[in-house]
Length: 71
Image (cartoon, rainbow, N blue to C red; front, side, top):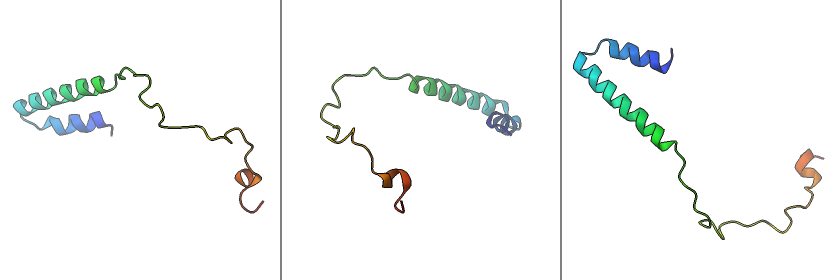
């Protein structure tokens, strides 16, 4: 059963006042979820100096990497 189906089934036996409260809560959760999915504006330079590229970044990997220790 889907999540929506479970919510509908659970809400079916509630009194009307509780159904209204549940609906209000669900609407608040949905709107809060939509607001949190909006990406924040990026600020250039915040991570400056936090990472680096190793000098041997482009060096070939050893055979053990590709074939395992037993190669």
